[in-house]
Length: 356
Length: 260
Image (cartoon, rainbow over all chains, first blue to last red; front, top):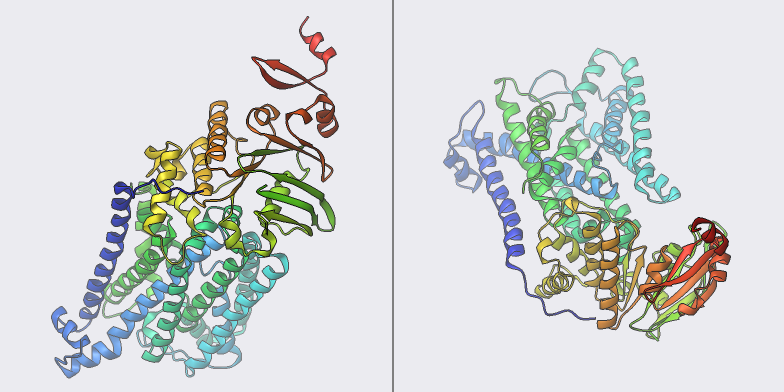
């Protein structure tokens, strides 16, 4: 059977080109946003000088210090975390065939919070220091991160185990995730009940996701993990399109649905686990960013996956910039701001319907 | 002979669903798989391209045993249109382009786009190219699903109740398109059906399943009131309207009672 009489339709090419423009525009906007975010704060550094400094042309040692040690890592952490959570969200929505799936549907963030609580209350890593609020001090932040990561991965492992026993069906995964979430929430509540004031403050403080916590090494680890996951999901965009068309259609097209679903799950969960362990709980981005992008460029995973990563980075960076400025000189953790920033935009997009 | 099915066995939780099913199909032919709900029609269809793994038997396509091929290789030979397709915010063109998945290595090529375009022309649905499939009617969506299976450039097309959710006009249109493509491109189609009259009009051969086995198999001559009553447990009358054979439920006595 051969069909070769067709031409490449011009209107389709125009349609596709428009999507590329959205992506390109997004990249440009992210870059401008990055420069702006670094330039504003307690000390204002003009954008041109920011550009000079980050391209390696030192302007002033004081500015070097501010940019390289504080603002650049924080801005990059926001971009990396936003991109990672959003791409994990879009993948999970497709894998679980569920519009409210997100990195947290499977209980990963609750597991991370429980891990932090165990570390603080049981292992006595106690006091958290916040660089921003100067409230409390964690005297061993690494142990807290490692324990949180351990519980995130444990939650992921349990979900995968359950789904391998019962077959990797979306319903089983979602329901197992809900069950796990409850267990970890109860566990955290239990520990908090017996914690003293400082420990309680430390646990609560840890759960406020904050991109200001990271150093360059942690940033590199997160960036590596997020980048690899984005590459994996982009490379599999056609498989995700196939799964979106229905399992039977996908199988008829030769896609190994169970394997793609399981691999995608592992990767999305791992990305979320790493981000939660380093930064704390940042909700909303992973759930809603993909939907915002859907409203603008549709459900085609070829554009939805990179678009979600890009827009996740933009949203979290914008939120973090506002969080640093809004009640200056006090700095809010970004997790408080993401929902405030994103939800009104999202509701507007829901009301407006799809872009034609 | 293009496709031959030998001794196909399928178990579901140790319950035998298909038992030694065997038949063959020539190129340019449409085979209708008939039988009551739950008899294993869809299961049989899914076994043919390894969506379900049969317990035993073989499916030969042009001499190759399909079960020895990888899933992608099978997808380049066999197209499959399921009963239900999911929609999304996707243009019809992109939805059909997905059918090139078994041929796409890294990204879509110009050739893929040309093939998709020619299918849109073949099914005269150029106007639907940039329509979003989540805004389509059942008939349009079914055409998109069929178009998607055609761009796979298959040798055999499997269709699971292709007309079950369509109105009369769309049913005729879809089946006529399948008929035309099967003849022109010398491929074969196997479809599960409920409507015996549609089957009589568009299929060349008929397979009646009963209790997981082939109860009757052959040309139009196997469609008799006896066979249908044995398979469906329902008496029917077969008559002719304008030279076309028609199957109507009922027995001659009942028919008389209703038409005094």
